[in-house]
Image 1 (cartoon, rainbow, N blue to C red):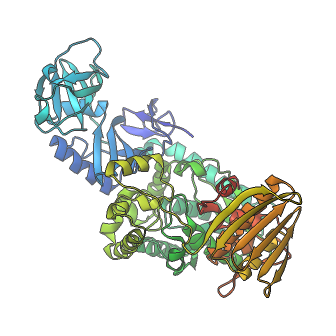
Image 2: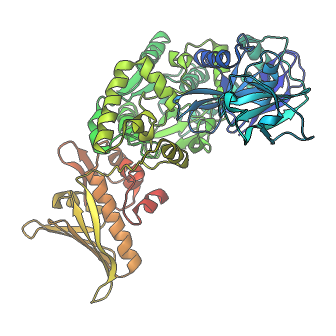
Image 3: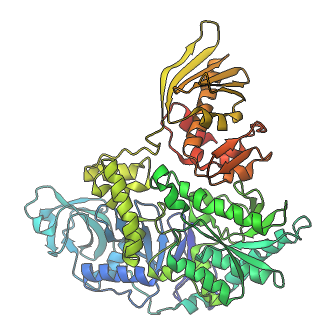
Length: 636
């Protein structure tokens, strides 16, 4: 993955290779913060930046210029702002203030120093090296009266210009005995904006050969897989989400496989933005593409009480609302018993989890699907240049400030975009926000828990723990249903007649529930009159009583712990089953049945291969508060 682009200072455009196709000059290297997924600034984001700059500095010298954003790591939405090949500053959404903030950079400070006297402090030179130094009030020659504590400000020192951070409001500078600001960086190098104001068409022209090459390579990836002898007669589909990446994948596929029937798959999760559903349907209708739509209908809302709000570390909604309908759609669309080829627009730069995707991969959750990833190495700017170059209509949500489009209440979306959602669709937001407030109230959590987005994690990461501390919040949320619990009685202990045993008390699981899933552990015998279930596994025995008592015995301590963990996993699985049917689809011996009445059932045909365990949304995402289980899930 590349963390840089090039910049042609003659044409004033970004270059995706070192040479400009317009003037044929060599561009200078422009480093980007990882992952380097630079993109064009949307109309909405440009308006946000304009308002912030006008408020802070009384001017915006970039108003008529192309602005580029490069997302980087932070508490929420945070982007490097690039204009004329200069790092002007950082646009970030402050999770505490719940609003956007613009942090000025060194290059940005030098540009604004020529335009404004706002947010400026002039200091006396007290040493030859001021960068990194703390400055006291007596060293201040002049300061504007609009500086607020914590802001990045312009620093002037003779002919030197730089950027610093204020420790106090400027009104309190004189009364402070401590340092009032810190100089981040200061030097005498001049920075000027380019005399040339470029357009998107200029960017397209300068990168023509690069875009032609990567488009040709992407089409060759599609052709290369589809034309293989073992795949040549298989149906070809494109996973079309209504987003920019899948739009490009669809257009590339249509051009790569002209004359061949191509269908678009659209999984309607039931919680899609109305704009996305409308765009996907209209685009396919306008271009004569057969759209096959799988709907999850009310699956999200029907499972919400069981799981609680989905979270970044527990995305149960993805399997319930996406994979299950996708499985059904592919089974209906493919030749019986054959594989389906699906072109997908996933890219490495989108997330850490996608960084290692190959040109084609089988889908572990949808056995009948081979995915092809023709734009896996593309960056966002390349996706947009393709869209602009081909003059493709695209989802209007991008112009309204959304970097990525998906489910409107997705926990993986940013708080900045959640605020956008609340204004764009107040009716949809009201339903979801009302649920969150009621859920938080039952958990004894305050309104600020919802307002600041803490619901988006089951286990808070360090950045959110720091925010919680700043806000004075105590956050501890469990996803295990209240009617299900396991309490270990004695841990692992030696048996008098040899071996080791673990005893526990289980609530919320009946004998029939246990019998329905424990074939995956071993052979089952159930005696309802005696109120007991007996499971014989290799070198281990499981006894489960209608009273909820659980007894696991094995020849070795490690074996007893392992079997106990596996039994509890199955209990969690059956108690929280969503009836999504994914495990049924991956079972190679048809040993699993899932229906609305009975729920999950594993027959004695089970070979204990474990594929259903690896595919289960419950066992993948539910944070289990039992010894050894969480570690086991992570290993899977």
